[in-house]
Image 1 (cartoon, one colour):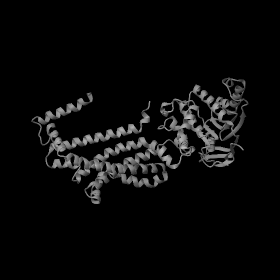
Image 2: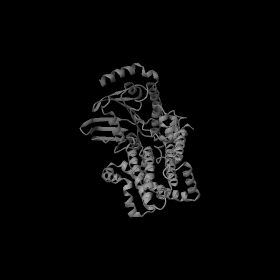
Image 3: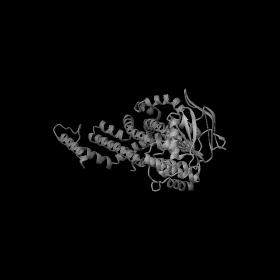
Image 4: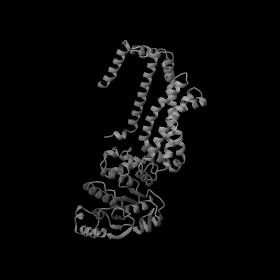
Length: 242
Length: 245
């Protein structure tokens, strides 16, 4: 059974058509990127899977269960971090656990995931004291701490500098390889999609244009970024996005 | 120390003019006169009586406004249908300057603490209500989306997200309320009362006790400044995360 299944999904915002007849199937534990220009509906697609937006038509299900609203098993990492300014790093992670995990475990589990994303020593920093990369690490720790089956990421690394972006990508792959949750990753960066994912879903305005597989095993080292395989994929994807 | 130079200079200037042929003890009492009146107020116990009466009305009215305005503001701010229905009526009610309600308060509640407490509560209610609503409405939509994904419960949403998010705005409302409350209290105590600092000032004026009158005004100044300092301290304390560097 597919971890994520979209069948003939459409979405209208008033007169604007964001998605038409879009189908997509993501296997359990798969890492899939959604690549496309801005305004092609890729974030809308992600939010529909998250249950934050409702599809105007078609069917969406996760593990065979129809999606009717947001749920903790489908966690989202937002481009804008979505951190609570009045809570420190640990507090921003515990807020996702409070009331859902035994009270005695909350703090310990939060700290575990904070160090997993490389923020040990920054537990009591507030968001405004963190760099963009550290903010997104905090948001990632919060999502991971809820141990979702599906991790939905909406251009999470779009707002950080190139070097931070690469190290965040490596970190994400390391965590994904260890946990093997399903990841749906929205991006407009061709390089990012190639480096991270097993499959790249290329979108055109309103729907899926083509799906391209990345035949490269994990772990993927830095060498893969500049490899022959990666550059021919880059050309192929570039052509598709034209 | 430099900050004190100007007030001290003005006090000296006042004293020189008060003691010069231009001055008249009935209109411009010397600092000595005012000081003597102040000491008399303290030693006679008169000050404690009036200050106590004013404090009870101020704190009572303010507290009632705080514990009603903030929860109502949280609910209205997060529910646009409810807000749409109630806002026209609320806009009308907050348009009455509180002082125009003094006669109504007297008719309803007499000239005692209840009437003053009502007026103070009424005046404090609106700034805190509106600022709470604004604070809630300005909560970042991304944070609300994140809360939905985390399945934060309704009560937890108010307590853990809407309240802290609106807190800076609520505290602005508190500061405005405190300033307004002092004005409303003093006026209501001057119109009809037998105790309170407002009564003390007006009573002194009616008896040509100019020194005492000025002493009362000075006391009010100190109270106003103290309330403002208290509000600022509270803000710094509750919003300490902002200062973390």
